Image (cartoon, rainbow, N blue to C red; front, side, top):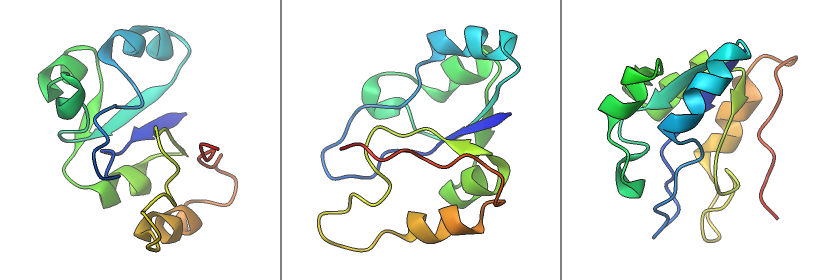
Length: 105
């Protein structure tokens, strides 16, 4: 399985859905991780920490959605302060058998 981690884009959000320390356990379980470049920076985790633990970097959010089978995020992909999110359309383009992101209540 390939898990994708996009950069959080909700205004003021500094968290990241996956920290580098979790990558080893995921790799042992057979999960690959593709991370949008800069996704962990606001939370204090530079890209180099992720790549050192085996994550692949994607140069854009679109690439994360194209490569991933499941999306990990802190906030719901639809959370955009009342504005429609382009992430919803990205999710719809993912293969039908893929697990989907689970919105945060």
